[in-house]
Image (cartoon, rainbow, N blue to C red):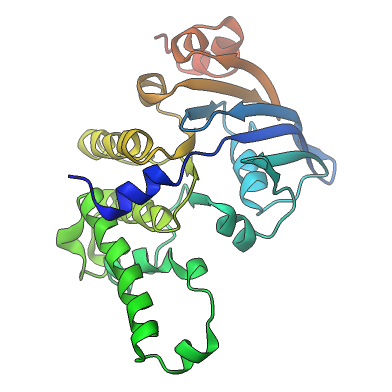
Length: 271
């Protein structure tokens, strides 16, 4: 089924992302040391590495939570380096965090609607007259998008349930829905299947692939589950101690000697 939301996302076109020479330092600790990579429009790129390697720091620089000392982030040909997070979100960058960051007392629909907040630009007259036809129409349009997203990730049956009453796996899907409600052209996913059981992991992987293939959203994924990384990634970047040490095809990367040393070798994983 093709919804209006899916159609608009495909028609909006895809954007690529270019990260160049990112350097980030906290006191005497260098979290990132000249990290560079590119993500093609519509591509799913995974970033892997051991704990503390700098993976989340990369996402924090892209989304504006950290401001790098040097380097640049370019989205669709426009530099966004150093912009405030809400402005970067307005440029089309959505994010799903490693830990659940929802409002537990609000319903699923209300949490997803919050993703539309940056799109509700003030129009003083219609906002003053909230029940005027124009203001009401805008509200209904945003609600319709949120409803379509709930249907897309198959959580419509929970629409009126406070998220605090839902399982962890469903809450993570609500977070994905809220990020999609931002109308992102680039989606940042920080360990989206962490802490999930096998069934929840398989469901989330399916939705991530649907976002890429049906909506055309460029995606950057951080994930420790190497089976997931190999199965769904177009390319993989490996970081260690804040530096990029390898980049390439998922299966080649999984068996790369340097990758085995800094990451996979810790658990003896081979793919």
